[in-house]
Length: 291
Image (cartoon, rainbow, N blue to C red; front, side):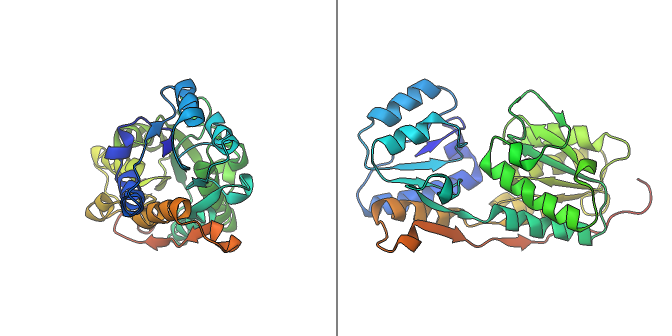
């Protein structure tokens, strides 16, 4: 399994942990081991590992399409499954994922229907310059990360359909997918005048940080500022976070099955799983006073 964050990410990120559990379940059934290769810390070393590792196949998780490791994996002629990229980009690879655009479009429509007009978006990989915070609103097509690009496209579609100009949206780049980064990025949005009445984060981890920043300013989620996440990790329920649910464990399990139990039907090479908007107390009608 290859992924871009640090190795500890696979054991600390709630969504990644569930995904890895699903993958491991299939590996155990086949009495097969798992080799975890983080790409970002040592890209050349990781590339060498891909080129030389004694493995039967590759699973790519959170890997931007410009990483050389993907081409190196395909060059070996071994099975490849991607959990983040559309299968059409890599015609020889299996794909298991969700319709990111449709998922965030529904979340965006929820925010628009609540009457919000001042909206901020927070995400990781919204710029190739990781030091940048506040951004001019990027065209989703220009983003380096497939997931960020597709999720932003869904929000753009929903906001435009609701009569909002995409250039009006405040966009903040997080320097990683962590709760601390979510809070730091949220500060750039919440301390602006006029303050956004809604903040949508591209992951639940970032959204939990947004909730921290909202509380630190004496504001109430759902009343003063609405907050939306993505993933529906276990902590989302306790935080009353409105979010998009996607099946992490099932996604990992299917990824393992595609590698170790490959389908005979070509249609089975590309698996799109369902998502669901889970509405909780962190979203509510746009405030009309005191903002």
